[in-house]
Length: 340
Ligand code: NCD
Ligand code: ZN
Ligand code: ZN
Image (tube, rainbow, N blue to C red; front, side, top):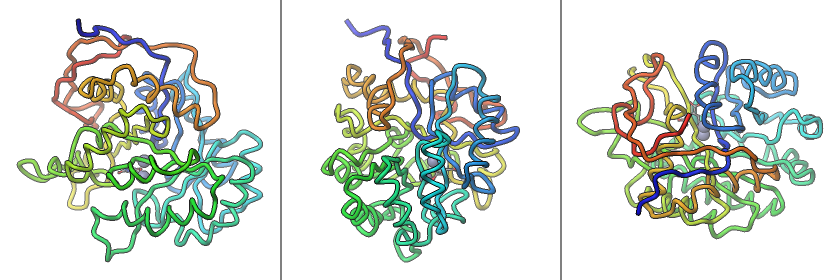
């Protein structure tokens, strides 16, 4: 008989954009409904680069999300990253990780790093104190095809970086390619990856299905079917190196449906339901808890959550709009529901 309910330890989201101000107050409860903790991305304007900025952002998140949710903060790395400041914020518990955005690679990355050589002193310190590096893994070289930017990043930046800092714990965020899945799988235990719901579900055809589909656009952009299948195989493989990171990235509708639409998919309302369906399709529901609730804490050296959540096999139709935002899978029916 098919499984009708699935109870797992409460999961965490190891990569999310909660934004700020009114948007923060609107989206944070969706993440808090599904997840106990989340690694919060620092790509606000201005970027969250100092302990003072991170501390006050953290307070605004706690207020917006309500009780029972713990934001795990990250510090935005720039060319000027100070090893002492990074170590201080880490030791004070202000942040758990630092985020590397190659300058210009994605939303609000203009202040990012122009050459990883510039942050080698920071990485050297992070390696020494055991602080995690989160990476948006795409090169920005305009000569490189958009669909190749993740694979080229691995060759040009990540592979040398992991060789130069073998003890540094690195998370390659939101992987989209066979190249990334295999590189992470074949590296040592200090390299892991997060996987989004969208990269498990859509390939690049979704961007052009009957017309241009801005709500399927995020970065790294979805790739060919072959890559989606490799990412699905990695996520459901049972390897502790792959874990849940939604990359929920809300943008107002008018910024998505525009002549120059923003990159980012808002998946927070039904992320867990989408992931569960993927694991079921792979006959891997017995591996879902590790992906959602155990592998991430183990990599970040945090205890897993004690509480549990239950998913039940009950159809749910994703609304066309949630508070003016278009959620991932809008209008589609999902097979699992999170019990309230
Ligand atoms: C993210 C955003 O909107 O902040 N967008 C996205 O397409 N994933 C940035 C990011 O994670 O690269
Ligand atoms: Zn990114
Ligand atoms: Zn992101």
